[in-house]
View 1 (tube, rainbow, N blue to C red):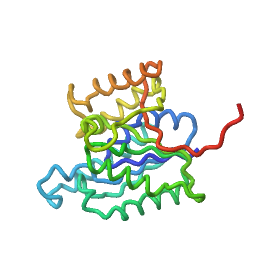
View 2 (view 1 turned 135 degrees about the vertical axis):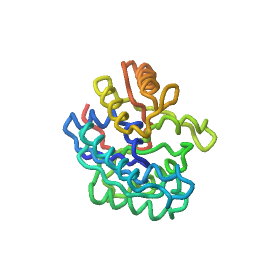
View 3 (view 1 turned 90 degrees about the vertical axis):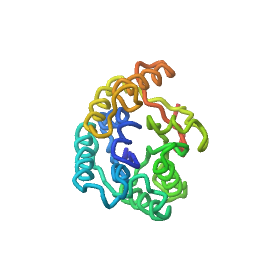
View 4 (view 1 turned 135 degrees about the horizontal axis):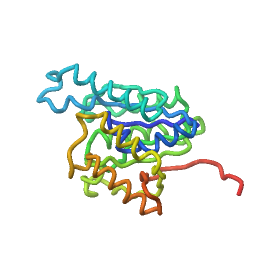
Length: 231
């Protein structure tokens, strides 16, 4: 199976589904990650003032994370960080369409549409548009993941709240997820921030307990068009 994870920023792929990525890779599936935005230039007053070396360093972290989690390939698309609303939605849709056409994934994981971060919400809209279930579309399952410090901080005010209905057991890969997040040193934060190691471990335990597991990542199934398997 070919799986595509579409993230707005470097580290979103780890926060949203790092443990699941590792599980899929260990099971022999081909996992690809597409990172649409730069992830760091919004911290400067003007995008043009950002240090290109910082952007390059963050991209380098994405490739280190890929090796750690077993990701087959990472593509970066360098959209302006936290400025996706300045890019025509059609341009972002076309990026996703090219990815789907090239990779022919059966499964996609991406952001939740009600996130506080505008880049996350725009990414979801672009993915949903690019994967409309026409007969030529390879995508049979589409899932939304949660990103701590964005999904929950919308407080349900920007759209429907994240309501997980799929739970993936990451008991055996939770440490890989935490290690991968530490690679993104500039993005990790000390406790009690939601992107701290302690908070990520606690969230995995809570999501796991919801489904009777030691640790889990939670997803919202957006659509599934798989055929029924024989019982």
